[in-house]
Image (cartoon, rainbow, N blue to C red; front, top):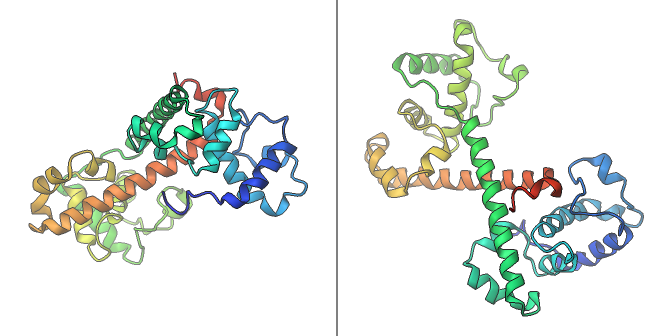
Length: 284
């Protein structure tokens, strides 16, 4: 488990105290997205720990969603034992999870299995939502030689822009680029630039040429790269990497890491924005 995920066990006493002060709040249903909602809780005495407590509350809420409705105590026990994510639970076989954590469930293997199944179901639904979101946002763009020439021409005219970090989502920023001569292709070029940016993030920092080659060949997202096995990706695209299999593997592994990072971010986002009343359709 990463350091970012680990809960400071010394601060869980503050969480328990906060929950006692806010016993009337149903944190299965609580909206932990919006500051106005969060500010309505009783924070007296917890002001200095507010940021940490909000993070712990979001983890606690997630665990509440996978335990029985009358077992808030079990959600706390999982949290206290640093079980803090769905991925962590389902990263091991069910039998291993039950065996390793049976004491947390008071030796009740049926209850442990129930929690594991609910965690698996919820995570699968969230990941599918995340993948659908990524697929919709990573629409393939034209890879014709004409489109490539226009992209190259635009990049040459905007050499001062670092497209690894450029904001391609907001019009005020995009409108500041040099569009003279490309006005009629603006929408198409923005889509190509987004694909180019995705590839810049998986190739070495000095290989912009490789990012262009990948886009021109129709490879335009980390999801697309990692949707096939590593060996098949390397074998099928070796010529793009000038027969350098080590470079091809490096790009694949960077794409895999990026996809996992994006997936975790999206799962975290869904955990924050999906109230429990909407998770029932995830866990059915």
